[in-house]
Image (cartoon, rainbow, N blue to C red):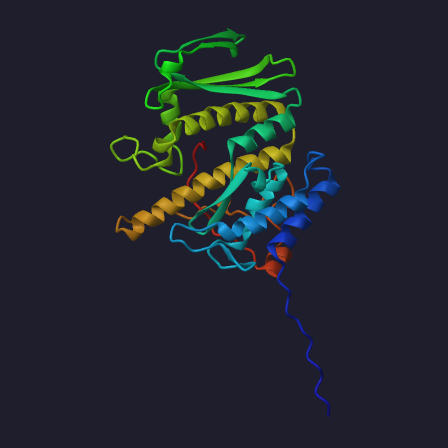
Length: 318
């Protein structure tokens, strides 16, 4: 009697690119996603895939080698990071975003170039940007109209330019005539307060800026990035009615802070300082079915083997 032939029941695992592509196409067909006309999300996805080969965790372990995931980061976090990039219309080859590993999670960080690009996407009146550092000895005056900073006047003596004497920084979104749509100014004290929330931890336990930190080495660049990001975030939140875009922006920022907090907890635990926290099922990060939710279909999770660990902690992102 012939033995019945066994059926191959093995489920072929989808690649990260396939998962992201399916989700993007789903969003586009449903009208939930509206991308810039000059933005090729397929090219951006491929660029991100290539960029991942250079991404390492703090131990020097690569996220991807020869086109294959190494297990350094969960597959879901990688897919989500790339999806965050696409929904915001960003491309790593244009320095609009970059990827960082925290614990087992990959996060997509938007650079200030990316923040400006997203702000211009949601507010088409923005045609240009102005930004500069205020040094000790400079004179700055700005108008406040209806509770908002408007036209800013900055008088500077070239002899004042000294990155060890930064007093503040400002950024302006300008219309086609160069008229400010919105202006943001921050004192150096406010900028430092923002840096203290950074996952990069540029300050030591005594509240001093670490001399070997990037913030200390390039204070001008980081100060400008901080004020530009703050202005862009205000413009994005006040101008966009795209629920999916805002969800993915906020999700990316919250996840980055949560992952950084979890990585810090794990680091302290490895050094003997044990910190116990409870798992919060609300922090599980999965590819979203719709803008309002972040739980995938059970069969999709089963087929792809995608289940992300839940990073803990929340906080502001700068």
